[in-house]
Amino acid sequence: MIKYLIVFFIVLKSLIGEGQGIPQVFVHKDGEKIGRWLVRDIPNNIIPCCGTNQGQYLIFFPPAYFQGKLCGVGIWQGGKLENTNLDVTQVYSNSLPLMIQNGLTPYSILPNKDTLWHVLVAIHNNFQSSYRTKLPPILNYIFDSIVKKYNANYVWASGLSEGGTGTWGIFMIDSAMSKRFNFCIPMATGGYDDSFTALQYNLLVSIYRKVYFLPYLGTQDPGWLPFQTYDAFLKNNAPGQYFPRFITNGTHSANVWDVPWKSRGFWDTLGMLNYKIPIIPTDIPVHAKILQDSQIINYPNTVSYLFDSSYSGSGKLLNTQWFIQSAPNGLSPLLYKQGSGALWLSRLIPGVYKIGLRAFDSATNYIDTAYAYIKVNGPVIPPCPTCPPPRKCIGFTIDAITGKFLFTYDDGNP
Image (cartoon, rainbow, N blue to C red):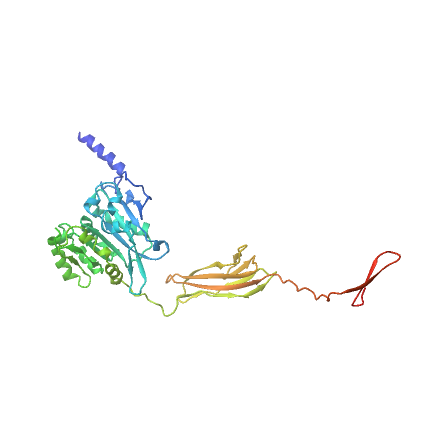
């Protein structure tokens, strides 16, 4: 019997693989769009060993993300009853994910009046709290391979009930994770189980790395008393980084976990707390500059010459790129770059052209743009020659031999 069990486990291990999640048959497919959310599978090969079910997540991208604007990123973990089966839509049963599904687009107004929009990633699995120890590689994968473009000053974690406990877990299970997060926003939870003493070092590391703690908890929540240990620790060790919100008579319900997301004050506080004043260089690190032979050319000349004379104060000019900003309707001009920054434009038709040049600085990632304008005049049409004034016929005779009419005019000419 033992022999057969050993064979069984060897076969099972070979099917699952080292450090891989157990594949699941999900209700919704990877890449499916559900309302305002995109469904994604968590790849099996990034789930640490062993025997953990594969999960999914929903991700909400605000429209501003696709316009190239940098956004904050929130990681959401749902409650225990929102992780019971293989239907990822469970994760928007309550609180912020439900509000987003119903039309909320989260944003913060920064101190400089810019708008910071927020991406939200909602983790879902039917393995519940066991996922807490699997989160670091999963979250690193989401940040680096899925979201990619985000403002690293505004990365936050939140969740309700068991997901609030999982939120604490991000900052307490693995000390490295606090390098990637700026805010811890657990709701309706007393803390990370009974492991506070063993894991408080990681919490101290999070404090050292300037993580802000903004827990929301009702005074009638079962987690109220267990949380007092956290409260005393953070008051003592994280002054200026700890901003709890205790809701009098709040219970383990929406009267606590809906509160922050409905408040403009909360979102703008989130934008204010980790705001970094942009450093404006006294000298622009890169300059795009165009020299041109002539701004006006005349047909039949259909060629113009431009020269790239861009430069960088840091001495690390990475690249320049020519582009056509606007041109008359018809054939697009041909751009031919000929070493040492020279550019020839050919096949020009009459009209006005706007040619752009972008310069990139590898030291600062600064981009500068310059433009050149070219007016092409069309073919010259000669004016109509001066014509004599019209003549008036004053008489005629008939030639007796040929029979032709011979007219006489008032200017005396036949």
